[in-house]
Image (cartoon, rainbow, N blue to C red; front, side, top):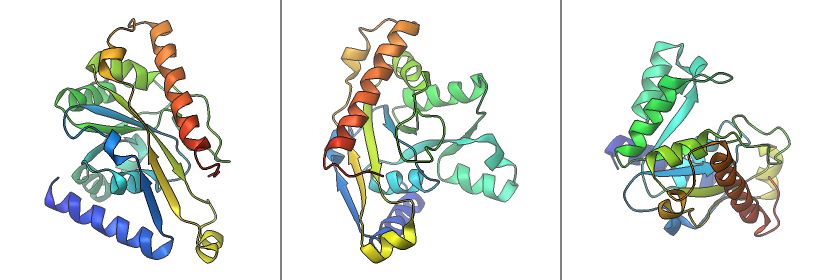
Length: 206
């Protein structure tokens, strides 16, 4: 993990601990090396920072194209491993970049719902994460975030942020699945089931 990234992780964890408290579970499920996809639910703009702070590995991120319009902010995003992707359309360049990152043996965080869930419930997942995993031949680690969207109320109630990582869908299993829509659906259904299992563990809603 590079120095500036590690420093940001320390700062994020410190702020989360001071403001709310934070619990992490299942870090051991993230492989120490090699390409891996981390697939998480998505409820707020802070999610990438919180998961990045919880992960033992340096993560790479997809970010919507609009965030890169400001040159200074774009530089900062790229400094911390974010790259642009166009939402709402097929972005071949963005997907090729994601595939390149995975084949280089790096860890990529992705939100397969495609956008934030307003009420915290799991939305229908996009097929892109399954396609990436099949093309790159990497495992998928499910993740689930639990925390109140009302930060002020949660602060006074001392509700902790909870980040859970589940057992991975292993690459040898993924390699046996066909690279077609049916195969993508099979993997996607397995991802959402594993995220739901993490959500049910503790019975705490976002």
